[in-house]
Structures are given as structure tokens and as C-alpha cells.
View 1: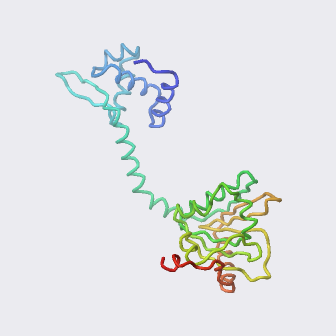
View 2: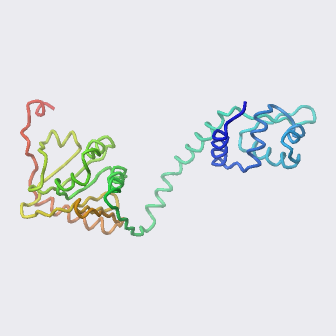
View 3: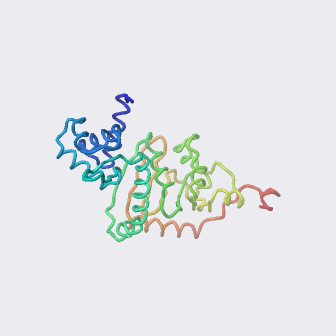
Length: 263
């Protein structure tokens, strides 16, 4: 069966990702096409020295994609069912899963080097996606809701994505800039705790933080946002947040329905 150039390229890219060098790929694909054979006929078919085919074949057998059997004094080689690659990937995935906690421990124990990333208007969704992937499954925010909604836009649906990802939100909000109404039932469904900041606070920028990242959002007019990865900065904002939380008022602006009370 003849393959198109695109199909051949795709096979080459995948086999390369498995660590096959060009000669190993040539020998493997030649064996797959020829079926069970010994080294000499395959070397003639591929026009390669027997020693080259032998070296590649040894590596392919070691990788588990070629099977070898003995017939009297000859070694016969046959390509395993291509589904073997699925098994190899599964074994690799299991191996990686086994060491992930150890790798995570190494990362946690290592000193964190602060990083600063700046995001212009069109890239701000990258920041939201980063927060949805947080390891601790909770995002804190000090937010001017009206300005923040303008930044997010109507199509992104941050709350819906956050709930789907199982990420909780602890929110301090500017009463003067609030755009929606909530009660305890709504907060519960949307995995949110929220309070209104003291009324004298009317700033328009917003701050979010999660894990060891603190993100700052200006207004759409200024259109620049940035994130700082810093454990000490995050600890500072955590303490400021808790202080503001302690002096803020309950945010329940929507009358509970009978259904909400039952739930």
C-alpha cells in the first residue's frame, strides 16, 4: 500500500518522537512491509549493509516493537502488531504518573525564582486560563466587577469555566462597581465566597492570586495586565486579603427564592 507524502511525514514525526533514528525507522518500516524475515533478505530489500540492519534490529527488539524467533541457526524477525505503540505509551504514562509526586516534591523544595509576565489586551485570557489550572483549586480576588467584566468579555464565561474546573473563588468586591446580584444559594452553586469591601474603597484595578502567582488587571482603557510568580509577594497579598476580609460586609444582594431555601 502506497502512502501519501503527508502520511509518510506523519509516521516519521511520530516514530522520531519515540526515539527512532532514521535508520531504525527505515528498518522497522521495511520489516513491517516485508513480514517475518531474516537479516540478509531485508538488507537486500533496503539496500543497506547487513551490519547496519543488525544494529537497528537489536534496538528495535530492545524497544519491544520487533519480535525475534529462532529457526535452526537463523534468527527470524517480525514487526509486532502496531498496537504495541499504544501499550508502550500506556507504560510510559504509568511510569511518569509514579514519579510525579517525587518531581513535585523536588519542585516544591526548590527555591522559587520570581518571574514577571506582561499581557496585552488580546492575551489576557492566558491569565484567566492560568488561574483555572491552579493546583490549590482556589483563587482569591480583590475586584472591581464592572471593570473586570469588561476585561474578560461576554464570551469567556469565567465563572462557568471555573465551576467546571472545580476551582473555588474567594472574592472581595467594590460595592459601587458591582454588576450582578447574589445570595447564599447562588454563591454556593458557583463555588464562591464573597464580601463587599468598605464603601470608601472605590478603585478600578483588580488583583487575583492563586498558588504562588499574583495577577494585576488594569482597566480596558489602559489595556495592560501582568502576573508575578513570587511566593513572598503572594504571602503578602494573602495577609492583606485576610485583613480586608475581616472588615468587609456580607455580600447578599439577591432575595432568596423558596427553591433556593429548599436547596
